[in-house]
Length: 368
Image 1 (cartoon, helix red, strand yellow):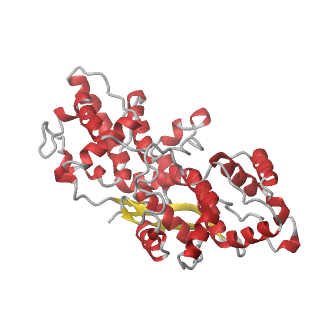
Image 2 (cartoon, rainbow, N blue to C red):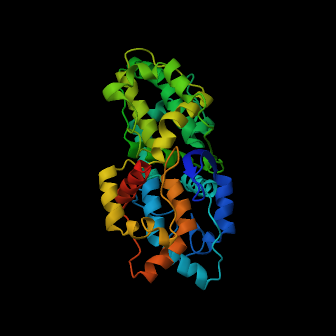
Image 3 (cartoon, one colour):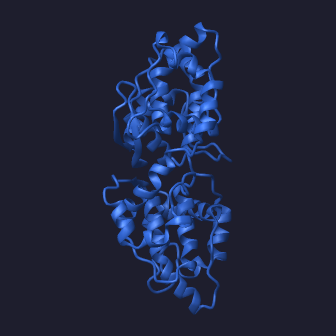
């Protein structure tokens, strides 16, 4: 069972637009995927229907939550039509439920780019990993075997342990007169796929949890991160499109440029900090307000939303605004009525590219 608990960015209900922090849970998301009968058309890693794409096995993708939001929006009329033909009643989708589904997709590696086990095996040797880390036994003092790596089951622990392990690795490389071995995101994905596919690791259960980042900002300060990451090096909006594997690689490669020994992080501290600096960025697109205003006009949104007689809901934003997650909730609640209105007015259903969706969200968040 793949489980994830993820802090989604604030979500807004169409009724009243009350903002609150939502915690998405992949276990609930998987249940929703089944109870709402999505699984009758879609499958996840081969489990489910075949009428629509497998959401766990699409290859060569470069998906982000914003891409996901735009695809669901574009696909909605066909999806609702298929549901009617199959006699599937469209249930409401709250912000919490949308966050649960996003958490499930993340836990199923939907936003992770594919890796190659054969390449990963070669990289594991070429980067000298195998000289210390055996698959079931340790090849060097203090080097745990791969079968003991918690990081294979939790991407947050992967980030934490790669960071904490860096100082020791630098010493080990220096002793062996080896140059620091930088990684690319693709190389790490390949290595992870190889290691996760080893016979002794196939039964591992992925556990991916984000608590609310109550102390994340304070830790970011107390650990000294804020001393360097300011001005041009500030992390705000720099992690927006990076998944956790990308982030683990960035932190690994950053070790070689650190002048002082880097601070260590416990698992909980790393979760808190990543919840603070990464999660909300990742679930919110980096759109442009002026471009979004043009999208709002070009896609005929103003035709109904600026016409009180249409019955379309107000777009005034709440304290924390719109996100990719809440756009899906809004689509599911408001979309069928919107489709009806647009059909009556002979307007085409609006389709968005991912950048257009990000720009539209930015514009909606600018409204008062």
